[in-house]
Amino acid sequence: MKKNLTFRPAALAVALLAVAVLGGCGPNSSQPAAPAARPDPNLVTVNAEMARNFKVESLAVQTLDTVQEITGRIEANDLLVTRIGASVTGRVTDVLAEVGTRVQAGQVLARVTSPELTNAQLSFLRANSATSLAERAVERARQLIQADVIGSAELQRREAELSIARAELRAAADQLRLLGLAEPMIERLRDSGQLASFAGINATRAGVVIERKVSQGQVAQPGDPLFTIADLSNVWVVGALPEQAAGSVQVGQQVEVEVPALAQRKFKGKVVFVSDTIHPDTRTVTVRTQVDNANRELKPLMLATLRITGQTSQQLAVPEGAVVRENDRDHVFVQLSPGQFRLTSVELGPVSRGQRPLLKGPVEGAPLVVEGSFHLNNERKRAELE
Image (cartoon, rainbow, N blue to C red; front, side):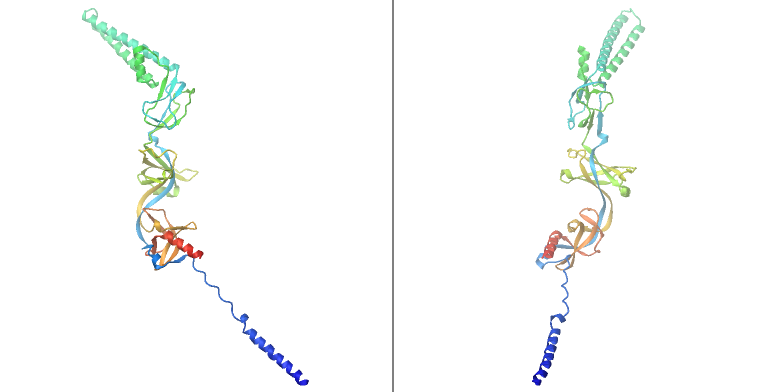
């Protein structure tokens, strides 16, 4: 009985020791495994067959033009704009032209009735009658001097009166023309004495009516601008240049004008004016470009982008097709080894002849993907998702 009591504690101790040894050798004794390294999302690796689709060239120095890009708008050339008003005070009876109407020089735009016109026509008739009387008096004097009835002094006096009468007639006719009376109506007044009931407001140049400030029944005063006509065969493109860049643009520089409303069409022109003053509110300098518009495609108030070409420079440049836009920043793919590329952030200037100057990024000679960057970026995104 005592022998059994002595054995059991010893056996229990051995069992506890075994459990402790086994527990020390269990999973709790090992160190936690290190997490797997996350792949670089900017790296992309492609097989040899796919790599043949991407063209790689070394980053090199290029000859670039300095390009200043600003926004602007189309405006009529003020040198080819005419503002037309009435030459006589009167009431407008007819308006014959609207905004957008193409007119020729001499075309009637509106008609005006006026007592002033009536008085001018009566003065013309009196001058015409006095001229006829003076002509007959000279003719009689010539007959009488041949008959030795009057002396030469009387003939000279009557010839002087005829010269004055003719001058007054010409002045009266010019006055009618200034009042807007057409030449056929003046001839009819001279021949038949029939008064014209209205005067015309006539176009003084060919072009397009771009503004009308007259309505039927309105009383027009001399000097009031009633119509504005512009020759749009040549237009201005006006932009605002930041004051910091004002010294980089000079008169005569070549300009490329891009118009979004015409499917991004481009037009050539040159700088004809750079303001000597700065707008106090916007801190900009007005720049004006002159562009030919023979086909009338450019219309006033159209929006446009001006790219002003300056002096050339030697600079590292990236082809425009190599640039990838990602997260509102510019990137390029640099080849690390055959089939392996890295998406690299860069800072670039505006496009010049298909090249973008490199302001910050890889060094000269770095192998860049110049064709297929878009598809390579899609492959990178696909691999990242997987």
